[in-house]
Image 1 (cartoon, helix red, strand yellow):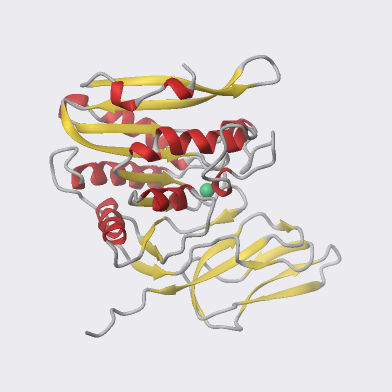
Image 2: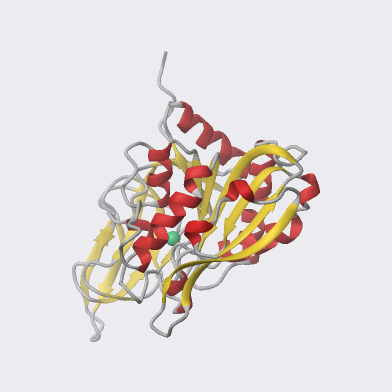
Length: 331
Ligand SMILES: [Zn+2]
C-alpha cells in the first residue's frame, strides 16, 4: 500500500497487523518502504505512536518495538498502538546516522516535504499519518555509533498542559535519567513537529555504539508498556525503574563542544560526571602523539554526551554538558 492510502482509523479492531507502506521509488525499480506494526484494541482509547531508527545506526528501539509487538495481546488493549521500527530505512540499510541517498538527517527535516527527497518524504508522511493522529508520542533513540549517552528519557519541561503531560509520561516510562527541555525545541525534529501539533512526547537515549544492550531494550520495552498503562490503554499500574538524575537543558546536541582540529580524541571524564566550567574533559592528539587541542567544559554541570569514535574531524561533537534540574520556583 502507498503510505498516502493508509488511514489508521480504518484498521479493524482487536488485531495486530504488519504493513509495508511505500514511500517512493528506488533506482532499482523497487520501493523505499516504511515498516508499520499496529495493534488495535477491543475498546476505544488513545492512539500511542512509537518510532525507532530515525537515525539508522540506533538499534535499541528497533528491538524494543519487536518485543512490544510480540508481548501485547490486542484483547487487553484500549485504543491503538502504531509503531515504526525503522523510520530512516536508507540510513538503516547502510548502518549510518543519516541517509546515504540524500545525505539528510531525518531528525532535522520535519515537517518534511511530500515532493522532496526521500528523507523529506519520510518526515512528511510520518507527520501526516502518525503524529497527526497521536495522543502521545515516543521516539526511541540512542547515541548511535559516534556518541555515547546515558540511558535516559527526554521530555518537554514546561508549565503548560503539554509539558505537564510530557513530564508525567516520562515519569511513567521510567529511566535512570530524566532530561527536561524548555521551549523552544530546536526545529526539524520529530519532537518539535509533535510540539507544533500539540502532541505530548518523550524520546529516549542510550549508550548505543552500534549495539543494543539488553538492559536498554528491557528498559525501553517496559517503558512503552508503562506509558500504555499510564494512558489506560492497558490495565495495571506503571512499574517505572528508579530515576537517579533529573537534568535540565536545551537538549540540542547540535550545539556541543566540538573538535577545532582533526585527530584522535580521548575523553578523560565519564558520563554523568559532575564537572566545572573550564575543567579539562579530554584532548585531541595528532599521529605523532602530540596534544593539539585541550577540551574544556563550557559550563558547570553534568556530562551527558561523549564522543565514542576516537578519530575526529574538525567540527565533530566531542562532549555536551547539561545542568541539574533547577529547584522549583518559590511561590
Ligand atoms: Zn538518534
